[in-house]
Amino acid sequence: MKINLINYAKTYYADTARKGIPDQYAGKFIQIRKGPKEYLVFSPKGFTRFHAEILERFCMDRDIPGIYNSQKKSFDILDPAWVVEGGGKFEIDRKKKFLRLYDDSMAYGKFDRRRLKEKLLSIAEFSHYTVQIE
Image (cartoon, rainbow, N blue to C red; front, side, top):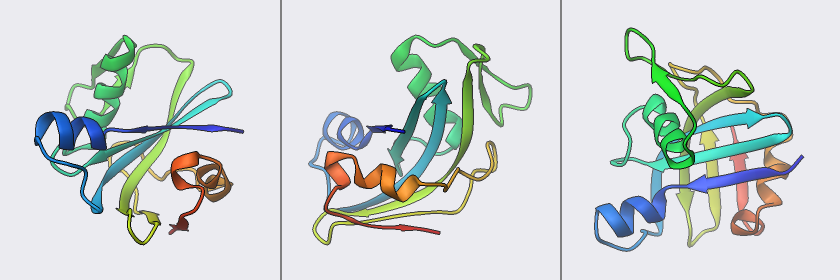
């Protein structure tokens, strides 16, 4: 199964922070699925603080209706065909060609690690990277 990468690094560094994407950066990510389509959404530190904000941004960009739960701890997609698999943190070193995924999301739980490394290596951006999944 192919995975679709959404990386808000360009949006954050170029459009918001008004600087180039650094060689090393870190942040949080979520893993989302709708039927056979799987998405991995990266968001650098400084752009979104919480996993729920990443999902909210993803939905806003695609006109997918959603709402925060009563405690504002998670953002829920109103279309039940969408499933949030989980989330975690990431570190990217573009010079060393290294990607690390680890931890989990307090709002959405652990991300699905099964076959994730091979899916990431199938994406052009990471095809020559060393991928470490913890």
